[in-house]
Length: 115
Image 1 (cartoon, rainbow, N blue to C red):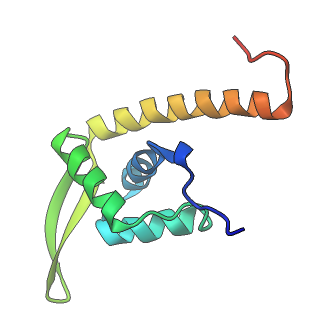
Image 2: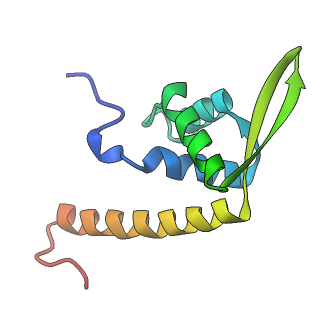
């Protein structure tokens, strides 16, 4: 059986990854697609059809800023995290840690999750 790279429980993870990567440096959409794949060791693969709606939504919410830049005769839109985006990233990372800790507790076989 082929390994599934994006199981159903991945909801919300692309947004977290986009914000995390853009908190380090600005990137354009396809560059983000490649960075997600590379930085996750190909465990997570998302296409432009996933990334661009996230970019547009986060920009509309004030979490990202964008700028147009001509590169090799083409216009690219580069995105970067704003202060609001970095604040949202912090909240998402806290929630991600809470969830992964809880799942790890069950996977390890403990009888009760930590309070």
